Image (cartoon, rainbow, N blue to C red):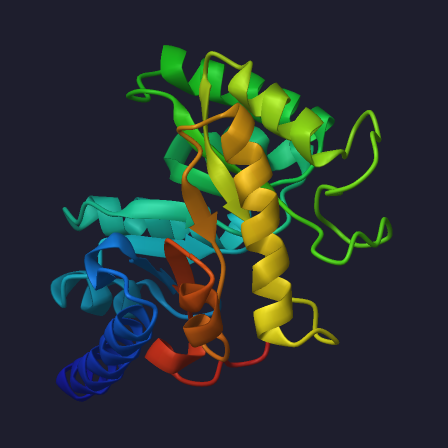
Length: 245
């Protein structure tokens, strides 16, 4: 069964890599500059180990209660992975996430940036090597009732550039760029064009913030066309997810 599962994942991975290469070629980009983050939420650590054996180095998770044990299990198996925390992060989970994540994609408020910075500083004292990479999660449509930093306005906690400055100002964090999910009621090309616009605003103040985490299984092609450097792929790699319990 394990070999059958690995073969299935290998075929899916080859197809996803072909999609990324084709999208990059169409956009006149080098596919090597696009990082595939395999989203493994609801899937077992065994699937993560299959992905690692197939050459995947970047793995994304949405929930700390699932990510932390998977990170521990794969580390115990001697597998070195870059864990990306991509889901909504509660401040009380920041310490746990800082202990294993290489990058947190979902920083959408100054308060969260401060909590994550404090957690990363503590993790550094406990042996974490280097700063924790962080992205500003954008609210593409600017709806204040949804998650994400707000591209417009000057909200003291959630304004995009305020959040970016809070991350950049933490010695234990490193601002790498932005992340976004296309709203369901927006065409992907329109959504990712807005992400590109916001990413440029952040880079204008922080030139090293070059990461654009955008695009999933259904819309990675449009995201790559608009400059995504990281695509977060789950179902196209691992199949339809079992229901959350």
